[in-house]
Length: 416
Image (tube, rainbow, N blue to C red; front, side):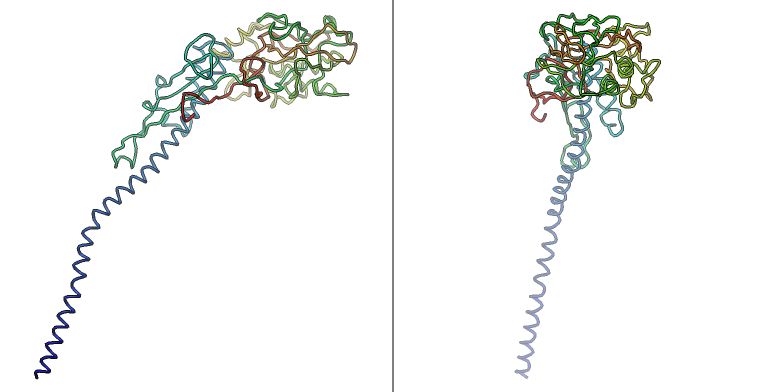
């Protein structure tokens, strides 16, 4: 019995010990479950903060991109108007209108919260540094301060950030001189060079091509101021026609020579040139008018020809356009063209060559007639204007020759 009792007692002790050992980890597990709750709360807060950074900051970056695109378009529009008119008031209106148009585009609804009064427009005569104000400004900067474009956050509100604000700026202006801009295959006679405006005065109407009854230039009989631009030997009327419409993409470089194109080339000249005037009767023949579109003003003021560049710009700004919108295809400023000015003092009979003095910007004052007395007229605008169909040169100097309007780095903004 003692032994048995002893065994029983021993067994009971073992069982009691087993129960004690068994209960101990249960108490630890309960203690651990109590500690997890604050850890989960802290972890959830961290997860919400990280999710907020991803979601709200991603949304902020998207709005930053939308804002930058709208400001880029605004700056380009303002710079183009400034280049054409030198009028900062008109350029400001153009920039604001472009911003409003883009802010109202599909997907940009949030930009509508930016009042136009919160869009800053500044002008400068220099690019770097950009100094607002000054005489003869050529560059424009359009911006929106981050304080003026703030949107409510979503998840970041859980960590005390109620709004996400973004801002942006854009700078635009004239490019360096274009490499091989689109030019017409006609060559007015001049003297000197670009520095002396080839002997012209700004606003002067120039006969750029003479007619058969008025062979007034000195290159010899049979030449009427057409030049051979890329047509080569045997190049016919179709080449002249397309080049007059705007198809030439080669070069006419000051100091080099270009070949003359004998004959009146009356039909091809008129058919190509008059695409810019919406092809008045008898039309433009086989020219592809879907490629070579008319300008928006084909008769400034509706008073007949000749038009002046001032009248043309007034109609464009009003707008008093001859081409109905929005369905018509158009492409301003198609009546502003670049031509090589040549030295006509040499004598060339038939095919020959003439020396290029430089490039000039001309406004086409009237369509070309399709008869033997055809003369082509242009108003001299100077040596610096918006050109077509080329890329800027690597020359860092901005100011001479045909150019285009481009965006520049905003040197006053770290993220530009």
